[in-house]
Length: 98
Image (cartoon, rainbow, N blue to C red; front, side, top):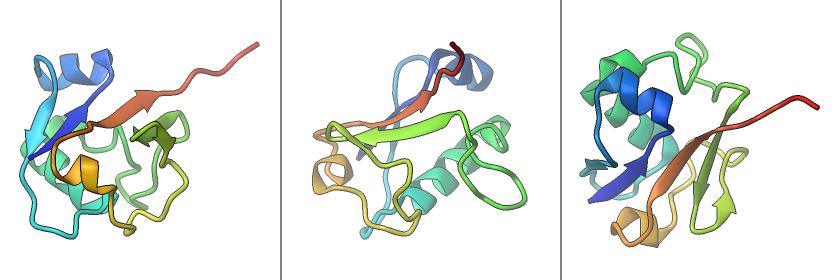
């Protein structure tokens, strides 16, 4: 069971309390996980990834196992601790400004 932690504004939009748990067959990739998340919560489509290109939005970052996975290939397998539910997959809203 994969655990996904969303930022507060996306949890509010999707009416989610706490983390989302998603079961997927291995190998699990960012693309498959985000596809499943958007399938389960359609109101999130276009908030994490661009609807037409599927690319990660500029101010959204992905973390797992204390590593920034934001620039990894969306088809690269996620770390085993994430796939087995030991560590969460974090979707974080980045901050900008000065």
